Image (cartoon, rainbow, N blue to C red; front, side, top):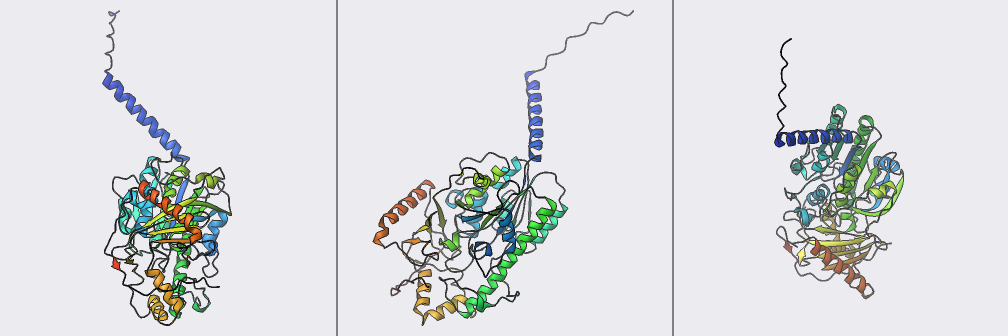
Length: 478
């Protein structure tokens, strides 16, 4: 037999080597855990419309604006009657959704502004949870969407109306096994409003009480109604694709970034600018056919969506998850919400702040009442412009003159009881009976502005008011 060979003792591993191995195993374990957890996460689809006034849909009581696909979603889920954006123009509103922060905190105050690059945004939260995060159409503010960190960004141009069919096509061809967070933004019913191809009879349309009823207004309202139908059609296309590809266990949220481009809507802090449709469906998880008066805003969307995905609700945001309200669990809804507006380039340069209570009171602070409210609408001088028809009517009709004056000339403070005055036509700021309420809401807005570090900056070049004789306030029409 050969001699026994003596086995050399194994060389001890260095601490560095052991640490490296442990780190590798930890990363591997966390990766596997993430993959397993991601497999149980629901698919999430958000459908955003553009410039849609909440009252202009059958879901919210309109007879002139049939929205069957909104109704289909409402029948399958929960409809919010007290949902609001935090800014009535596109870029600030969408930045608030995608950051969970008020415009004065994320840096996107004026329209066309973008949030600061150092702020964590919605795609990053979902990528950490193992999601594929994709956007089609107007999600951020047009091409700004590319800077938010989505895995895939498509069709971000102005009225690039192929976005919806392309989103459906992409969804049908999708191969990834990751859970999906898909945000789709239609450009409808944003201007330019299409021709009235649906044969809507302008004479049969209701004209809102705070508008001027002229034949031209009716023609344009019929075109706007066509644009709303386009939006609802797009929603239906996405809903059908989701059902076909992702199946019933999909969380769907639909809302609009603010109201339509009508006077007292977009760019203003009246309810037609801030109050937004919000319908949420998640079969088997949330109640179908339910309506709620819980008060929520667009800064609440990000924490809510993260909670739906099973993630920890981020700290330090201005928003709060309303998932408990959806699940029928105890939820402390806020009693009031705040909003801000600055301007859009050199248009509607009119910095203002507002507070809206759940019981219907609205307070508006106009930081520079010496400015004239001159919007894109008032700058249109085409012969067929409805605004020009309003000006013409104002020459002989005192009610029309009052409406035009009230849109462009505003006092430092406004106070409305929207329950009795839903179109916010009678300013109660000077009513002695409301002095205590006015002071309380004034103080609350002061505190909010201080807490959010509101710079109260004026963006753009304002138009100054010229002295005009006082015009009697509108009285609500019967």
